[in-house]
Amino acid sequence: MKHILIISIIFASLFSKQVFASENKESEAEKPFNVKEMIMHHLKDAHDWHILDYKKSDGSEVVVSIPLPIIVFANGKLDIFMSSQFEHGKKLVDKGENKYIIHHDVIYLADENGGLKIETNGEEEKILNAKPLDFSITKNVFAMLIVSIVILWIFISVAKAYKKRPGRPKGLQALMEPLIMFVKDDIAYPNLGHKTDKFLPFLLSVFFFIFFNNLFGIIPFFPGGANVTGNIAVTMTLAIFSFLMINVNGNKHYWKHTLWMPGIPTFVRPILAVVEVMGMFVKPVALTIRLFANITAGHIIILSLVGLIFIFKSLAMAPVTFLFVIFMNVLEFLVAFLQAYVFTMLSALFIGMAVEEPEHGH
Amino acid sequence: MELVTPGIGLIFWTTIIFLILMLVLGKFAWKPINKMISDRNQSIEDALNMAEKAREEMKELKAGNEKIMAEARIERDNILKEAKELKDQIVAEAKKEAGKEVEKLKKSASMEIAAQKAAAVEEIRNQVLDLSVLVAEKVIRREVKDKNANQVLVDDILKDVKFN
Image (cartoon, rainbow over all chains, first blue to last red; front, side, top):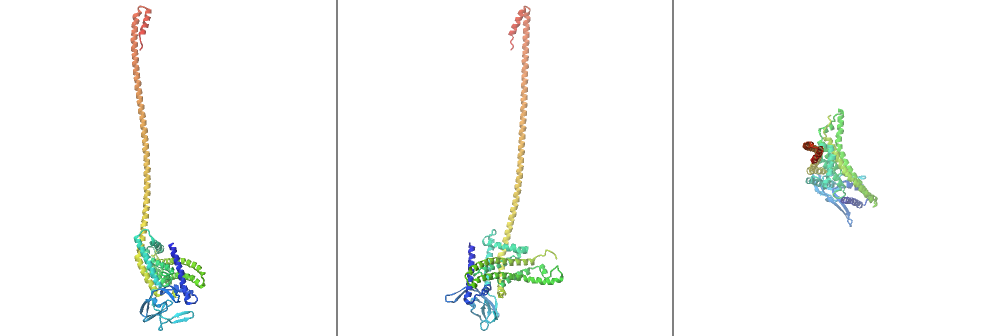
């Protein structure tokens, strides 16, 4: 009963959030509702955590958002300030040598006139200003931190519970144990065998990091709502970790099979080596794109369904959208688990292939 | 296009966050949890093995019990049989003994009777002898005087004789 309540609150808020966000877009610009822009806005990273905005009775607009720290490096100078100083893109931030401007959530160095050089080419607009190196704690970084703290809290308390009660698991411990056992017995062990314990910390961390970020990505309001695992930089970083795990731990057997395949004619070997080396890099690229695309696709579908209401400008669409969004959210829940599983599974498989001891002599 | 262009900042922070997460979790969560679960699995396996062993022992014990029971039953049967035999033997012996005793008694009784009989016959014979002598004496004395007187005399004598 409690769970049903929580789920319905989540859905209700999802709905209301999308309405707020989209309504704002429509009224603010007084121009036709742009679904693409709305969707892209929700998928992309941001420098502040937008919660909602509304119009006061006097017509002035109020934006409620959590400001996040901006850390930028330009012209040999590191500048740290809060994103609220931009006042939602309206203001230039002057840090002496460097003047910063934010435009569509991208930070640029302002030119000598304190503005942007925009080159319009038909529909496309191109900004010619230089960009600083942006190491800001963005929405995704902040979300990742929150999720990491949640993961740490959950698993450290589970570990404590194990110390206190080594027998039958209870509560959170009982909830997490099947997942941990799933990763250990069904993902790690079949691929790694007796080397499971060595790679288990990495695999468990990857699994729960992706799983919890996916889950938080489904929650539409504050602690969640960031599209972390649907961001290619995040998935790429995780895939790089997998890549390093595979190739740093790869044994002689693995490298021999990659670079100088035994058991085939010598003249084919260099060709195969090229293919194998390509394969070495294709694996993490596939991991990157698979996770990114799956999560992003799910979010696009949900946002599009909500966008339907504003395209049709009819409340009659709402129940249809509502049902489809609920359906998609349930599907997303499955995908959240599935993609965490697939990423971990493939990492384990590749690592397993790299550390496998030769059983057959050739 | 921006969607598929990884940002350097996010890569940097993801790397740091994930590394720290992995190290901290590895030390404070995965290692103890994994160890506890392995230990528990081991203890469950041990317990199962022990139960299996106990069951086996139980089975053996039960089989032993049955064997002992069977032996006891055979023993009891033997004892009963022996007792019966003994009883039969005792009864038979007693019967034989009794028969002998009766025989002996009979024998001594008949011997007694025979002895008594012989004594009686002897007695009669002696009496008859005495009587005969007496009769003869009286006959001889009377004969000389009268024939009739003789006859009367004999009758008298005979009257006197009491066969007792």
